[in-house]
Structures are given as structure tokens and as C-alpha cells.
Image 1: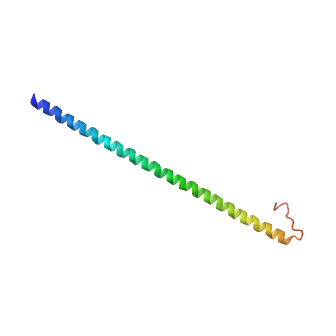
Image 2: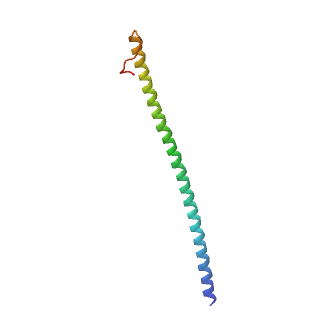
Image 3: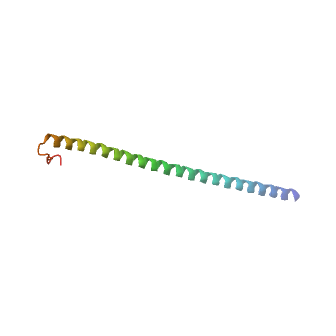
Length: 87
């Protein structure tokens, strides 16, 4: 009878230790997922900023080209009027 009680106590101890171990593992997994999520949000933000920068850069290039064309046409036209094509 004493052996059965010791066996039950040992099994309960092992069960409790296993549950604690599982709890710690789940906590660590959740922490890892939170970190990954934060990193993904950071990467997405950086990519959005990069896309916006590229878009603005393209607009600046387009605007520069347009202004060069306007300046050239104004310098070539004695009346200093723009053609409909340029407008």
C-alpha cells in the first residue's frame, strides 16, 4: 500500500513538472510570435516608406523633365507662349 502511494506521489510530481514545462514552452512560443509580428510590422513600414520615396523620386524626375521642356519652348518662342502640346 505504501508503494502505491509513493508511486502516485511520484506520478503526480512528474505530471506537475510536465505541466510547468509545457506552460514555459507555450509562454516562450507566444513571446517568439510577438517578436516576429513586431519585426514584420517594422519591415512592412520600411517597405511602405521606400515605395513612397521611389514614387516621389519619380515625380521629381518627371517634374524636372517637364520644366526643362517648358523652359526650352519658352526660350525658342519669341511670344513666350507654350504650345497646346506642352500644356
